[in-house]
Image 1 (spheres, rainbow, N blue to C red):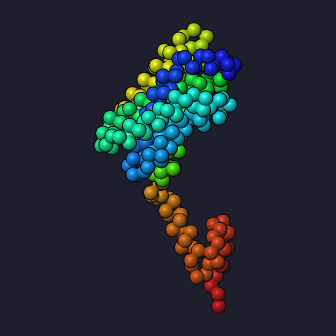
Image 2 (image 1 turned 60 degrees about the horizontal axis):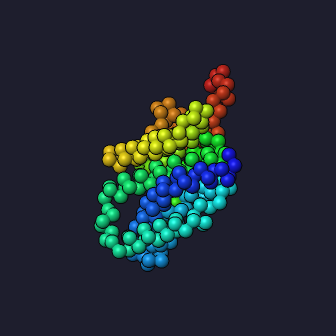
Image 3 (image 1 turned 180 degrees about the vertical axis):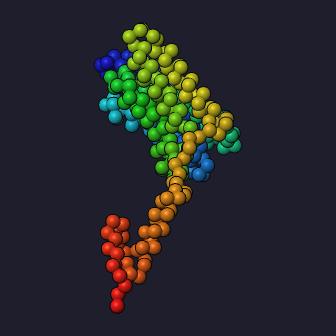
Amino acid sequence: MPVAEAAVILTPVLDWLDLVGVAVFALSGALIAARERQTFVTMGFFALVTGVGGGTVRDLLIDAPVFWVRHPWYAAVCIAMAAIVWNTPTRWWQGKLFDYADGVGLAAYSVLGAAKAMSYGLPPVSATIMGIITGTVGGTIRDVIAGRPSILMRPELYVTAAALSATLCSFGMWLTQPYGVDHWTVWAFAALAGLVLRSAAIRYNLGLPAFHEREMASDRETEIGAEAVAEAIAPESDGIFFEDDALPEEDGPRT
C-alpha cells in the first residue's frame, strides 16, 4: 500500500488510539521521574521518551515519517502528563489501577503499531514485531535511562500480551482482507484480547516459567564422571583414559 494512502487511512481512524497509548506511557515515564525526585525538566523528558519511544523506533524501521515530529499534539500530551504528575501526590498513582491503565495503553499501542506496519506493506510477521516494538520499547528506554530493572527482564505476562494483540491484529488484517471485513472489528478484538491477558496477569500474578539449569545429573552421568575423575588422579595414570586400550594380561607371574 502506498505511503500516501496509508497516511489517509491511519490519520482519521487511529489518532485517538495513538494519543491514548502515548498519554498512558508518558504518565508512567513521569511517575518514574517523580519517584526518583527529579526536576520537572527531567520528568518531561521521561514522559516524552516513554510516550513516543516505541513509535519512533517503529517509524524509523518501516521508513515512515516519525509520527510525533510533524504533529504537535503528541509532545503536548507528554508534557501535560508530566504536569499532572508534578501537581499530584504519587500515592494517587500507586496500586493496580495504574497497572490496568498501562495494560490499556499497551494493547492499544501494540495494535496501532501492527496496523500501521501492515498499512505500509509489511508482511504479517514483520508487522507483529513492529507492534511489539511499539508497545514495549518506550518503557524499555525509560528503564535503561533510570537505571532500574526493565519489565522485559521479569517473567510476568507483559510482552506476551503485546505480542498477542500485535499478532491478532496483523494476521487478522491479512486473513480477513479478501472478505472485506472491517478493520475496526479486527483492531477491537486484538486490543481486547491483549488487555484481557494483561489484566489476568495483574489480577492473578501470572507469569511465564523462567529458565533453570538442571540441578542434578543423572545417575549414569554421575557414575561416569566419578570414574573419569578417579582414573585421572590415580598415581599410575597419566590422566587420559581409553577404555578400549586395556593392557594384555600376563601369562604368568614375574620372577
